[in-house]
Length: 218
Length: 160
Image (cartoon, rainbow over all chains, first blue to last red):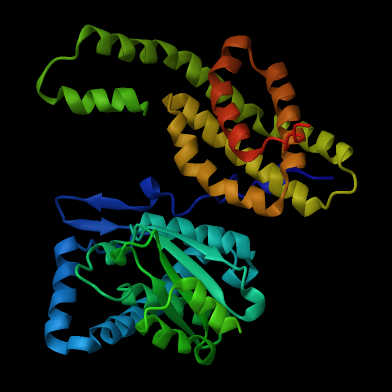
């Protein structure tokens, strides 16, 4: 028989850890932003993102995308560690013991609360070894002016390491559509490096998302 | 806090509140003792109410896995706790932003709408036995909001 008292461990039921109004705390006088555990958060002004883009473009030219992608990989590595630590602390169980649904539910809310837009995962190509990711309202796409190619290199880097660590496989991530180019959302294809890498050249050639996906699966 | 009252405090930074604004505030303040009493009642009766719901749910779904029933009951406990707080604050958005948007996907993925429909029917029966009419009227809008969001309406038969 189910006992309600047993369901209420310490009279507490874990719920939406990343709820925006609970997660982000600030002390204006000290100029500090913190999350609910007291870890420091950093607010990135739009002008800083624009400045980073412009500076990298000036300094490194065509390599700017690669630099941002690698920065994203570092960011993603630390983000994954912190994300898992926070989930383990709050839900009182290891991330490996969480269901995929719970894990993704937390990731979605975490993404929104950090101001990175809305993220959705599409597992329809899972059997082909590909994970499709869509992001709406990305601040990193919004600040990419005059781009002629998908511009969310930072996010592509974050996603590639995040899911590499989650699956313990070396995964690569290629962006195929971008809000900065007038698309409805930013689409990313994630999979084993040798499977996904050909997509980079297809993006360069200007192929659309569906065609790229079709060619990767053929 | 109720969004209307919240906005009122922000807007009134350099003026006195208008009579109709004071009225809104007054209505909320006057309703507070009832809200507090309803909150206390829900808090104190939580285990009794939900235990009874759990037992009836187990009877109605004897072949359902215990962990599925437990997940639905845990979600209902959360819905009740957030509804109670939303009722205290007179803020329906509280439940929506903090909990519902987060729960919606899980409910869909685990496909527990049938179970949830039965659960909320039982819960409403228990609440109507435990709370007075005015107390029910205070909590009901919040619960209805959760029910609507979490229990998808059954697909209607196509028109012939």
